[in-house]
Image 1 (tube, one colour):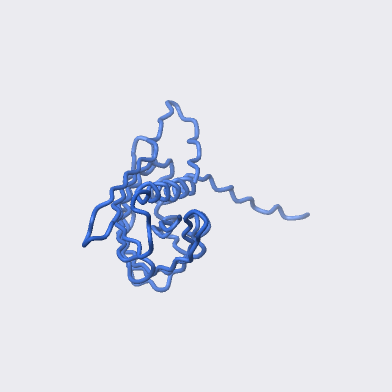
Image 2 (spheres, rainbow, N blue to C red):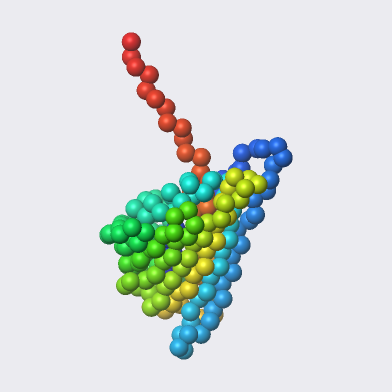
Amino acid sequence: MRFLVFLLLGVTAPVMAQAPKLELPKLEVSVNRVDHDGQHMYEVDATGTVAAPLPKVWRILTGYDRMAEFVPEMESSKVLSRNGGEVIIEQFGVARFLFMSRTIHLIVRAVEQPMSSIDISLISGDMKHYEARWELVPVPETGGTKIIYHGKLLPNFYVPSLLGSKMVRNDIERMMNAVLARLDRRDAPRVEAIPQQ
């Protein structure tokens, strides 16, 4: 099941050799199931560090129209409107569980605090409750960025209670690894065309 692809925002790229080489912390993820009005809500915390500098991280995480290029199971992500630091985004994706799949549609509001945080809340769609916060913290020792994610979600479709936390954790790890990999990807340098003589 891949319903968490809508949390906005794959393989962590190796860090360029430096002297001395500083190891980046691994991705850490925790998922807790809590009861909320007789229903199971999931609280998620994830932290990872990338070598990419804060401006690059911010540019990629707020490039909502390009999310489908690297977030697993997301089919499209489109900015519907922007008013200062408030952005309305529509997303489509696919949730998969065993041999079943279903299309998921969400409209969310992202409130940006430039170079610092993104708060996301559900407007409508295939969740009963969804809120999340991305925080970005510069790491002066490496020139990289620490990324902290906290979310609370309650799907409006069936999630097996015995497997739910594990499924949510797997989805979060997959999504976060994809995001971290994209943030640390070394974009190919632009090559200027050589004029023909």
